[in-house]
Amino acid sequence: MTAFFNRFRIGLLPMYVLLTILISFVTSCSKDELEIQNDFPFEVKVMPIPKEIVNDNTVEIRLEIQPTGNYSNTQYYLRYFQFDGQGTLQYYDALPYLPNDLYPLQAKQFRLYYTSKSTVSQSFDVWISDNFGNEKQLSFEFNSSN
Image 1 (cartoon, rainbow, N blue to C red):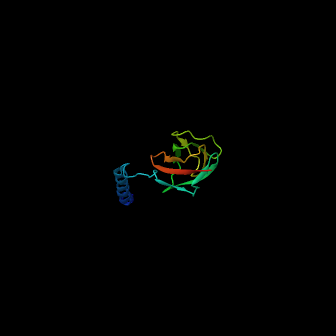
Image 2 (image 1 turned 180 degrees about the horizontal axis):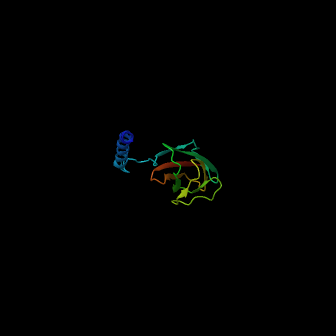
Image 3 (image 1 turned 90 degrees about the horizontal axis):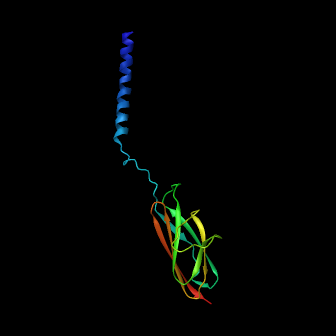
């Protein structure tokens, strides 16, 4: 019976060694070495738009956010500032945006509608950002047309 226990202990020795190596490997890895990337920069694709606009007319602006990776918890936001002329910018049929306020975007593909309220040239910037601090600036300019 003693021979059986000796063989059993000898058979367990490689498993103990393997377990010790595995535990030392896992404990030697710090959290800094095991980073999971969830911060993906992005680009914004804009479909072509007219260069001219008539007072009280609306232009559709189609945009698509194209991230370099995919992380399901990324939230995108929009804000805009008009620095020449007057007009309104809105998301689909929602209320017009207020300048410099931050608005959450519901999708990566969306349409904005700019309505001219001016008979002069109009210019505005749209800033799209995410909850990781990445940000893209888009500039739009329309010449007044009669």
